[in-house]
Length: 162
Image 1 (cartoon, helix red, strand yellow):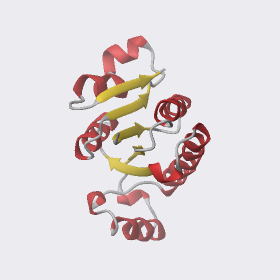
Image 2 (tube, one colour; image 1 turned 180 degrees about the horizontal axis):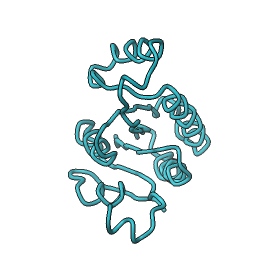
Image 3 (tube, helix red, strand yellow; image 1 turned 90 degrees about the vertical axis):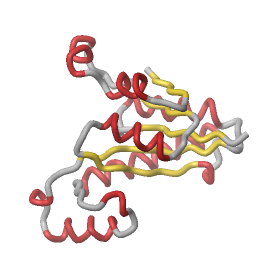
Image 4 (cartoon, one colour; image 1 turned 45 degrees about the vertical axis):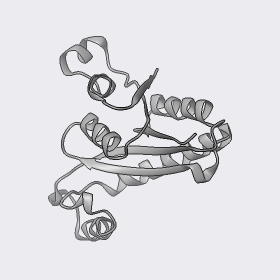
């Protein structure tokens, strides 16, 4: 049975656990489609040199949704490294490589909003993410990504991995 899964990651230990969980749960389903997804923080174009701007502008030609946004090349490199490690974990768990894709977004606003937007646009059945290691006090005052996603996600199951 076709099952579409969004795995929201950020390179942390908890997002690695979320990937491992997804591998255990969805490896037996050859029709599962797993998408690794990360939000990179948007930065001002003024913080980049001309070469970085040129590189990012060429990437944006493939992704019209990123028009007007800029991000650090180092952030993208770290993300791609984590995507590679995550794909290896999924394959090791038994997921076929052709079942795995990766995608990123860039947001000026809250990360949770970017995850929720992708979940809705991609029409995913399940959304998996790791719980961020914030204290209970901080979570009460500022909230957390996982708390907001659980509270506001519609039309899909949400799994928060500790």
